Figure 1 (spheres, rainbow, N blue to C red):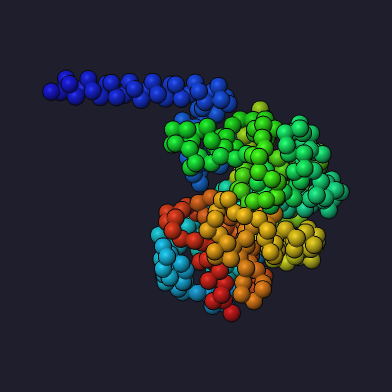
Figure 2: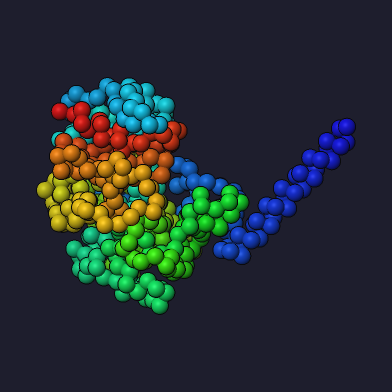
Length: 404
């Protein structure tokens, strides 16, 4: 019997090795051996991925702007929708059970609540898709600096390589709005064994993301008709910023935001590879919680920091305020409009009953920089996603509701 079991295990292991070998070859042909290795070695992304990619440093200035401590009352309990019901939970319990590493509440420019769970204020956290809100800010800065004429510029003005593919009318504004026009197939839409060939993986792991950006194809859907979340958009934006400014994207972020806003710590932007040296535009900013908060404070204060206009006030408004009405259909994240959630220029937002709105940067595994002008508040939540049923925008909205 033991011989039969041993033989069976041997056949199984042999089959697995053969499958992995065939998959490695297929992925190498599909993209590159580096892509194949990263897929098979690392699998799904996680919050430690900033350690596995090369990076470009983002230096801070000679001094930083202190966020003073405040002593205002903060919520003890939060109320939020949970699996079709309304749930009440002690805030600290929620933070602990959801893998939260950093949670900061800043009101009236003062830190009134700050906690680090199995972490510290000096710990590096990755942005995931919160980086897209930084991309949007960089586009606004490039327009203000005269590098880009307008969000209505066609993409092919800066990336002529994609002309003639049905995307000639695609504008920078369409990229920022995630208006479907570029083909994108998520891994979840494919059998699990085909996910490595899907666009989620293809816009994350390759060693040459410029080449990936230039491979875009039209979906056949009219540009501007539908919201469809798409990671080719930030890659194209990276090419536009790079070509328009003549600077690496991380360098431009350093000079336009990180130094002027008085960042407390240096940061970094993950790169596709040392050879290519292109920023992972869809996900790759790594920084400390307090500096993510500083970025939010720039937007809270209509583009200013300590009296210095870092970003035009008009851009802050244009890039964060909701489309009213939003004429598009939602092909992805279809639940969002049911909660009053909208999308504008790589910022998410929530419509409030009084006509105002909160807005927020949102990254995978629930990385948030939440801005609520109605209460003069910025909240940062960073960490893992141990409970996918928690809708953090609605939790943070309730936290703001309870603040004086």
